[in-house]
Image 1 (cartoon, rainbow, N blue to C red):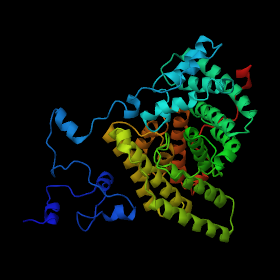
Image 2 (cartoon, rainbow, N blue to C red):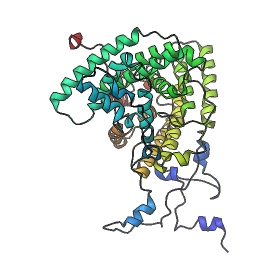
Image 3 (cartoon, helix red, strand yellow):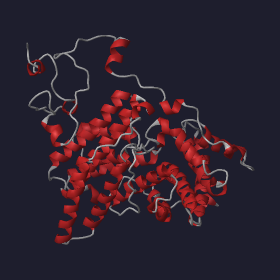
Image 4 (cartoon, rainbow, N blue to C red):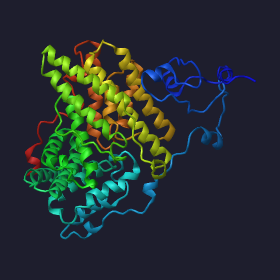
Length: 478
């Protein structure tokens, strides 16, 4: 009888693991029963989940049968299990008095139309829950939330095909609503946990508008709202239903602080229970490490003291070890709650955030030209995870803007850079065309700076992946 090892080494079957196969790297392992050396070094799960195919050139076929295709890739479900359940969204907002028809139509689009917020969440099944979070404070908080909701709804509506005249007119109206919402936020008293919840809800709607329509100024809104709500967050007094809005604001601010080497406002509280976040899925705990990276990056940029830098690098080592050992904590009913495609996306999102954290840790220690091989490997791993999930589910992962940009900076081959710029529209939040455009410009510039060696680290690049907008013409609001 042939041994399992002998069968495994037969040339008729592939032997490389999935990651080495995608990266076209040599896969070395002592036996088929253990992981390969590269996966072990990166603390990754070494798997062979792709279909087994005979070696050699594949026969050319004019058509693939439906049965063959379905045996290779699972057909993605049109909607999640959560989305197939009847919508539980509160409809009391429909009876708000004194709404002009155009505003009522916008509110219906924002709170009542299924799928309006699906681009803002990691899984389509969370779209209804996101709408419910915005509908819950109504009608009591309607005077406070009105302009922010109308601005947010208007910005999301502009992502649909409209005539040029409609776009221009609606954009001006949206900016007027956003200006009024800014004033409301500035003078909003926050004296209780209920006030803090309204503040976070108002800030989230306003942040979505600014992130989608303008692209700059998001961190200022996040900082203001998180600062006002911080005492209630730290005392664990917030309603659990508001926590996804809290994590969203922390994520948006952390992204910009990370790029500009600033210290974020709030380190997200550690939640012990197994939890799937509407935006960060299974990787909310990793957001705490990105906060730590921002603090270390800010400190490194502000000091030349050797002893302080040594302490910072020691802290960096501890964080890197914690990230390397981290694994997502999955709820027991994950498979029952989500479709197969959604589970794939949630697990892939957790992997790319973990790999991005390792890459950030590496680049905070090593400049361009130093230990580039490890950075290249981590970057390729992230891109491979994103691409593998997209091929398997025929859908792009949402809420992966930060890890995608971190990996994209490291791309050096000309052909790979062309593809990376094309992938910006897939992996940078799809409800933010302004940020997508700015990200493409940023990548071109930072790649050029790196090629001509005018910058040693992309953290210090003069060009940042955000829209530069100093002010909005005051005449718009007159």
